[in-house]
Length: 534
Image (cartoon, rainbow, N blue to C red; front, side, top):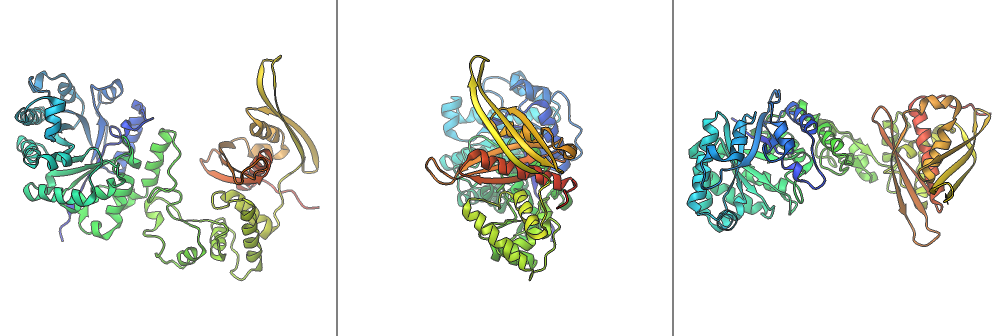
């Protein structure tokens, strides 16, 4: 059976930049485009040269891509002037791009109201703009703006826009659900009517996510015969975002319905880099990754219920639709008050602790976990604290050092021009040596952290790159005596991160528990020597 080629068109650097709070620099665009090219995408839309300084600068030279077609985006020419005398179109033609994706009006309402011209003038603008792109030696694409609304309003006009573009030489005509309001059954029906009239290998789909259907709508369009698909990394885009290529690409490669019918430019081997590409974009935007994102999220293959874990451990695919390693992810077994022995055994195995199924210590550990979660602890999101607890229960592992006492002072001193200050003093026992350390910081937890790590003797060298990344507080019960849960995320030079938890009616005590766990986990991770028991 001969497979059809399915073309992947990434619009992250243009559509993604429409996201609130996103403002790519030239370097950001360069780094992302290199990652997309390495992944193997067919087209990378770099932006709109002439529209802003960043995009103009980005298109002053052609990237050295190995796979991707470098594409500029812009409007068809304005009515009443020639293509060569339209400044914004001229900027596209002069850019160092392989292709130009023109956006054209295909909804008669917009032609009447937004452009204020006749339908024939709009048709002529599409024709002359496409011809100008071809004459300048570039490949032409047309984004049919608000196509689905336009088709419902005036199908004859919407189809004439497609016909005009194809006859003028466009390689692709892309049907855009610009406001994201079309549903999958409508997309299928309308795209099928288009592909019944025009070759499917000339038709693309571009969906927005305003009804949470961008991925479903994209797949519906492919099922109806479209052969190009546009989307963004992590679903970035204006308002609710665009179709998420991170979800779509593995679906095409790993689901038989599509993999048996289509060839795509991303290989199974490169699919393993999918999570890295997703994280790259998050890192550039300084955003916390979506842990529940399909395929690549940290919790995409996380199992909490004991029954589920039992099935997974027996190599059953019942609770995982694909193997996580195929998309560069890993399976995660969570430990909580819903856990069974299977959860614990699997989680322990993942950290190198092989315990037999009939070991009575497992029941003891399970009881402790459930009791602690009843008190307010949550280990499914604090794996490092769980590992420390497990090592104490199963191996009798002591702490590296002990804290005899600590004190935190918070106040203000107008005479010294200090609106607020936080100071901490800690008395430690390290290898039989009593150490008293003081620290001041931006808040009580920062002060405690500085005091604690000021002098830990032989352990200092293991903690130099330890960084507290995030700090979250949750009040579990209301009132002035409420139970507080604190979760701390820590990281180091290896770009590893881990989570620890503390629970107490006192927020400082809860924070200190999580902080101590973070330091002890780091010392275990680095192989620091554990003090000998007396």
